[in-house]
Amino acid sequence: MADTITLLVTRYRPDTEAEPTVAEYEVPLRKDWAVLDGLNHVKDQLDGTLSYRWSCRMGICGSCGMTVNGEPRLSCATFLTEFAPGPVRVEPLANFPIVRDLVVDIDDFLRKLPTVKPWIVRHVDWVEDGEYLQTPDEQSAYQQYSMCINCMLCYSACPVYGVDPDFLGPAAIALAQRYNLDSRDHGAADRLDVLVHPEGVWGCTFVGECTRACPKGVDPAGAIQRYKLTAAMRSVRALLLPWGAR
Amino acid sequence: MTATRARAYRQAVPRLWWLRRRSYLLFMLRELSCVFVAWAVLFLLLLLKAVGNGHVDYQRFLDWAAKPWVIAVNVLALAFLVFHSVTWFNLAPKAMVVRVPKQMLALAPKAIVRRLPEGRVPGWLIVAQNYVAWVFVAAIVAGLVMRSGS
Image (cartoon, rainbow over all chains, first blue to last red; front, top):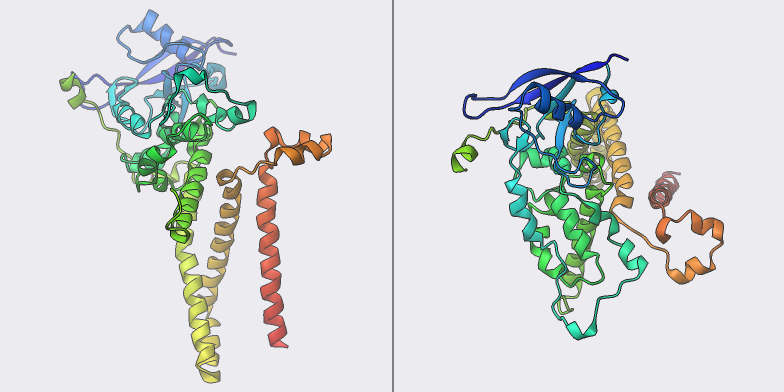
């Protein structure tokens, strides 16, 4: 095995450049080095001006999402040896505006996320009743969707979001389902309007790439299809039983 | 902050993005299959109209349907319809989470319960039910057609 590998890193310096360029860096190729370690080596030893986001280095914080050799990946969980002998292309996440180098602007997602009320909504709340108890079965109903770390890989993989940035998107819908399926939550009706909007679940054409890209096994595509069924059943019920309770 | 935001570089989506990945291409083909579904419906309606109009019209329809280009379109339509149906059936377990009731799980043999993760009916079984229903409906239709033909 060669002892170095070449990183082809996208650079974009908005104050001096009109569009992104590619810079080449030679970094040590070690068995235990992830792409992020390679970038940290560049920043520490070769070029301190390189900008990128990272924090935990263990697939929890969701900060270091990048496009590695064309695929949206967590750069802390993608090892350099996978691409030996190289080179490795490291680009910012697709479908987002580039702020600088590998840093993208995710404000669009941060604006959309609160619209699905991703928290436990209670209409009646009695503190003196104590904590809300939940059985393991009730917990397992939403557990998978609660693993989302907002890393944006699913948005980067989703061609619908690329073509139509108004689409609510995979993670926001999966997180809405995380609370809809929680036995302690009463907010499903509050989330309905945003989810059944044409830019909500019905914007999804089930390409399925979000689920393949997800590093935490959340399966956003599954969450969206499940909600489509829920919404459709609700419409049918409203049509057949117009006087029934909502 | 605002100045930086204004200079953020918008990454363009290439016009041929759907050729970049096998899954994107399959997705586009599935979207395209709706045209052939519409064609199949139209063909069936034309057939029914011809049958309703009597023998001469029906024979004219058969002659038209035997033209090489109509056969070619129908073969292509069949391929797309099969693709459409298979991908649709494969979607079913994504949209449905079927849980086996607790009381039934308690009664079922351990060997079966082990195969039901978290008491859920496995995806392949939901897909299989769709295929069984498909074969069943197809057999009924084939039975009706062949009986009326004899």
